[in-house]
Image (tube, rainbow, N blue to C red; front, top):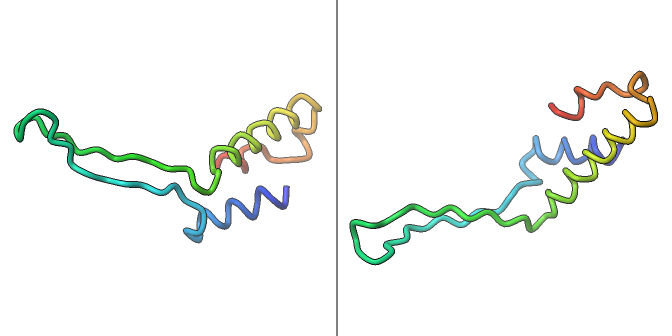
Length: 75
């Protein structure tokens, strides 16, 4: 629980985030251009989200729902 709370605080403080790269791709010609945004998970945010999902699932399966407000995980 403490680890999840720490991650939430890091997200709110802007210390935990996805890295992005943006560029314009012209394809075959100038009029066929498209703005591309690529996301990079250099801080393993996906792993952290999966951990939180498994934790929430375990709480439900173990009938610990009364001990933890599950809506807290989704804020």
